[in-house]
Image (cartoon, rainbow, N blue to C red; front, side, top):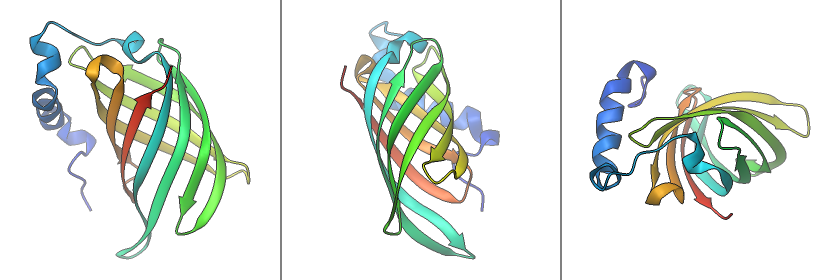
Length: 150
């Protein structure tokens, strides 16, 4: 199933996100990796594909610490269809001048399960919040809200 935000649709996605975040560009504000330096609380919800056409609910609560130079770490808890797992995160991110962001992460559960994920999003309120959609793997339909806490 092709996602609305497949990597091949990157130009369309950027245009949509730029328009959604146009106020930041109009007042002269542009973004860099340093824009999101700090600790963010993350809430993500959605569904994970478990079989042909079968989805189960998915939720995440975690912390992410963005270093301002394109790297981050984090810890949290995931819930997939009622099964909880503590997780550690690490990864990289790229921020574009138009305040769009690409995030690539490795999620490692305490049971040793490793999952590679990618997200695309927009930075709003001059870096105090990030709104993102998971773009890979495409077996998830997940949206995230990241709020800066320090």
